[in-house]
Image 1 (cartoon, helix red, strand yellow):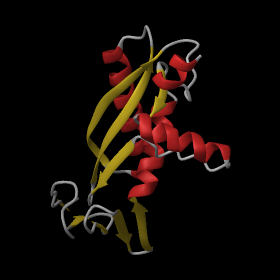
Image 2 (tube, one colour):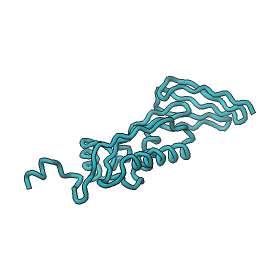
Image 3 (tube, one colour):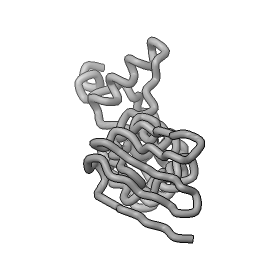
Image 4 (tube, one colour):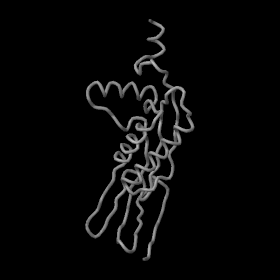
Length: 164
């Protein structure tokens, strides 16, 4: 079984990798998709698909209250009211020929061990993306933007609390 692989950093221009026994080739263009071509046809995975997988995986982690910073959560709340929730909120991805990387912005629950939650989020995203897409996840960067306090509404801001 001969195998030739060309690996370039995520987000590079078109490159390819070939696995000798399967005849599969993957290409990507400017970090927007990963394409796998075999004798039976090609499969293209868009970066939005990887972002959705990562978002769903991150939300399922215990201790994660929400994804995204303040402005993103405010817009997300409006989207949810009209029935268009965005599971990619707080998620940024770059998809290359055989690799993907993710940036995640979190709001954690008060009282949780933040480093543990960040590690759990990393593992969940790596597992989900690698299992579902076959892409190698090279890194998951986690930014904890806020801590959610019990009884605090997502829609409350400092201004509305002062008015009460």
